[in-house]
Amino acid sequence: MSIYNAFDLLGGLGVFLFGMVMMNNNLTALAGNRLKSLLIELTKTKPRGYLTGLGVTIVNQSSSATTVLEAVLVGAGLMTFQQSLAVTLGAELGSTFLGQLFAFPKITRLATLFVALGFFAYLLASKKRHKSAANAVLGFGLLFLGMDLMSRSMEPLRSSAAFLSLMASVETPILGILVGLAFTMVVQSSGATTGLVIAMAISGTINLAQAVPINLGASIGTCVTAIIGSMSLNREAKRCAYIHVVFQTMGVAVAYALLTIPFGGDRLYLFMARELSAFFSGGQLNLPREIAMAHTLMPVLNHMLVFPLLPLIVKGFDRLMPPEPPKESFGPAYLNEAMLSEPSVALFQVKKEILRMQPIIEHMLDAGVRMFSTWKPGDGKAIRGEDRQIDTLRTEIVRYLTKVARTPLSESDGRRQVAYLFISSELENLADVIDGNIRDRAKKLIGSDLKLSDEGLSDIQELAAVVTANFKAVMKAFDDEDADAARAVLADAEASWELQKELRRKHFTRLNAGVQTSIETTEIHMELLNHLHRVNRHVYQVAQAILELAGEPAPEGDRPSL
Image (tube, rainbow, N blue to C red; front, side, top):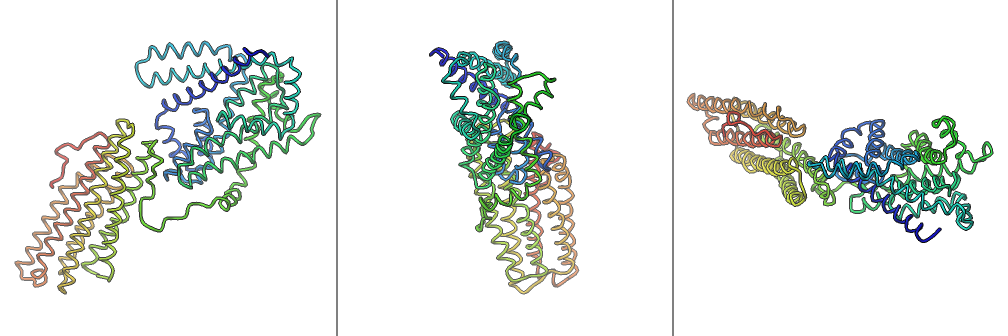
């Protein structure tokens, strides 16, 4: 092998890796946030999660990229650790798809055609999405062009006694696994290792017994990327990356065990790979296909073992790396600085943090109104403490959103960032009304040893029920991002205002009738009606923000009387 062959080998590997990165980046850009949305929406059951991991990895051609994305979503609280398990297993099988493509030797002859199509399509494209698609095609062509260069550069090694002797030693499974592990840790891609091995097979410099252990080592080596990607994330995200190592190691252990069992004049694992290859190739001998089939066989066998034992595996893993204990002090649960590199995920986190305000505010409102009928020691203190919680969440949300604003945002994400700032502020103001005004009026009533009349209390509870229903409806509209539901809340604004005026008139009627209790509590009663109306106004402001988030500003006719 001459120095020029070595240059071709290194250059071919470089072109191969560049093509893989180029294809991965542009396919991911083409898919946009849909990959994240798919992972979030399609992981409710194990089969769906498995198929989602398989499909996403076929698209981005990297199980490591899928696992890193999983870790980000788990760290953000958008996916649970349990949901991520099936996705991880699906990604392991999806990562073998590229090897099956490599096993078509004639496809390398089309490499220059794909390069030409991708390049000229890029020159002609005017839209960003079209350019990404063109670059993905170009990357695909470079991928196979690099394979062809590597294959040609290694042809002289077929006559090298030293190289053949070296490769013979790799037939020892442990040594071959270590070689594949080390090489993959360096190049950070099991696909690159598989591509190089198949290129060697095409050039006739490696056999199946030598190729299989190298690819097995690559299956573990590829986990390093996910581990590095999770280092800045929280413990749950790290657990998502580390269990990937557990699954891959189990698969390699199963394959290694089968490699040690003689069968049919060969090793059992190699026999199975050859038989499967012959079945799918119509009985033809095809070494690249046998190597690719052996690569795919490992996760298939592993998953047949892992799925029935998954509860036990997770239980054991939890002992080795326990879940993160719940936080004792109150604070944001989903705002993670490491997620700022993924603005859409960071905004999902903010949404979940805003939704944490809902049960707190509902309890504040219920307790505040209840103080006027059934006062209990500690009610006022509890409301004050919950208002501080809302203040804490709002402060942290605003701080986090200002950091999100410094990242590159799409138009929809920019609109979302502004809407979340507005909504979190409105919810804090709403909580302030309950704590600073409604609770204060209750304290004054109790301190004066007074109580509302039965009719007056009933009126207050009626208006409070409407306000609470409006609040629940608007928060559901926010959670579902349902513009129609937000419009429905706004449509009832005039009716709520009319109800408040009607309740005022009823109170005046009781005053004119000389009801002593109403006379003694009239100031508190009127102020309380006004404060409940103020809560309603903040609810309507949130509804308007939801419409603006959907790109549908509320028409003037829909705006409530404030």
